[in-house]
Length: 382
Image (cartoon, rainbow, N blue to C red):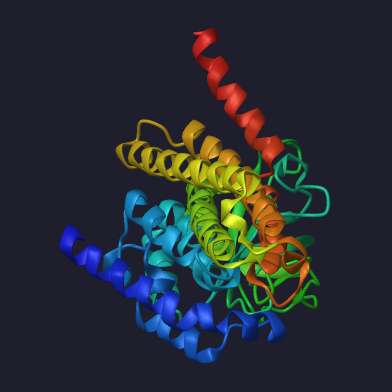
């Protein structure tokens, strides 16, 4: 996309978020749902396919463009981004990077338009950030496979039309070997979705369990038509997803800093603006500095992702730093607001709960540290 065109799109999204989504945050929190008017407008603007190839109806954003958009949509309730995040990210990228031409043509146009929603069904009760414990099985049978297993915390599962299901096709292997990925459509016999999870925060963004009870899929459902590529597909999608989540954290940190500054500049204690208190100034300074560091880190990591020089170390580093950073910023925001910051009617209270999940999903902070250290030590080993 031409630079001028991208800036126009970004400006339109910024205006939409701040004028229409932000005012709806209380409704999203109270109803645990995104208003259909916002969903329809997001689809009209191309948000369900911004990271999908243009030939399939997407906008074809680079990673550098993706993170700048993420910083804008991260400014509001995380459920807004979650609504279209899996289509563009972890689910959609499996098709983009590993799907056959037929699979791409069949699914990507509907994902890009928002007429269908995709879910990334990797996590299980015994396989979270580390998929090596994956137990779902795909047994070859005449004409295809039969899948049996259970998935947990699957984003958008309650609305999904298509599931990217990871399963073992080789039962003789353990760890990351022998994992394949299948496109399983909702309504397929034996596939059921549990009730939406009741979570600490991120109201309006739904997760649920997915159960596969002897689900038959044709051979054409095997992504790429090749067994054993599932782990690679997951890791490649997650690397991009982790950098995207880091940018979302930057967007939320920006909002939290603005809420903190505005409150400090207008709230009084003992007849004085609290912005005059050095302890409050110190918290503002720490949050503002960390926000700048996170933004710079994400933008630099996105450049390295696009030129192919680093698609592993930098995404994990950015996800680790920014997810931890936004938690600290949220904590300070509540502290700056004092007792008011603990009240449900105040945005920083909600964002404090929302932010906590970023350190857990798409790879916990602890797993990011393992990935980062291994990448660092590879150089020493050589």
